[in-house]
Image (cartoon, rainbow, N blue to C red):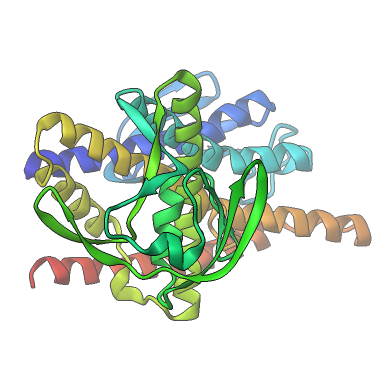
Length: 353
């Protein structure tokens, strides 16, 4: 268990490093001066200066940063962040999330390289005893195209979209004979089927297997990344609508616990490695999406403020002080840290129940 916890901490560290590396590389590429590139937070354990940049390792294994000249304060330096063109600053701000997304995609490519094959979205038939063909009008050879108006890209989208509808009635569109066919709203109620002696609820659908190839691996990895993005957006929507609450959310402690349980519940060491890697890919994409939300202190909030301030400056010919923006993001950071502390406390209480 301790080993898996250490792996979880390592995953967080790598994802944060990759994120900050994105900011760092684009800042250097666009000529913005980077004063410090740090992994972790708090007191400095080690540091070394190469050129104009100090590289450091800090004591608290949470977070990290890429400190650019003039990022949150006025600076007369022509290579300050605020002196760079708007498009350069925008690219610097989104680079961290872009690197996290690419990291998640790369992890998925590696994972799926070990797969024997994949499952397509095309029906190969129906389980014995299933009546769903008569009830829905589905036919062998149909390829799922949309479920309840949501596009189906790969196999996992089908179970995701079917499970989100609790009414038992689904708006289905399939590709049949090369054309999109609207089946209208049809009933699909899961029934109990026998799978090798184990009874499970299922819809009775069978799907065509897809052979492994370089193209199939890349496509599966890409659509899995999009699937993760969809999960995050759906989760945020559920949170706003009240379908889920704080009890359904996890902070760093909860995520570490989930990673540890994932490894512990895996049948073999290889399965544990692949399952944890899959979880890490989800975390990478999750971090990419969440960090681009237009919330102060997050990169998305900074990018949004950048575009707004650029528009105001173009209209009024007056530049908004970096200090003012710094105050906004500082307030946002305090609120964000308070929220994380609340979720972390909830996770700790849950561990001791």
